[in-house]
Length: 163
Image (cartoon, rainbow, N blue to C red; front, side, top):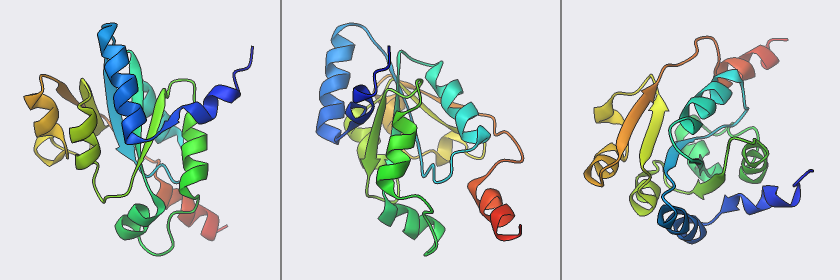
């Protein structure tokens, strides 16, 4: 059975996400959170999302808005707009929730949602992971996934430009 109608329901506001998390926690469910621009989805992203999904019952992805991506990556980014990036992520079976944030970092979002597990890629340390202190102070844990070398959106864009 195809549940195409549920795809759009995975994209939530902060208030909707908080409500879903509260309901899940009443049932003893756990929530893992990761975030990023996810501009052009590649195998490195998929690996990281899959590893994050293993850490809890539900996977929440914080997605940088277009304005946030522009500030972080430059005027030529994002390649795909927020709506399209959110839909792509929501189409992945292992993603349970996508929450868009406008700020440059997900600190406000993480502080609001307080996931059980916060996961970032191996180019970070616990000290440099935004929201780590808040998650740990709330009894959660922070995990650093290894990075799969050779995959990045910037590299993909360069390959396209040079072909």
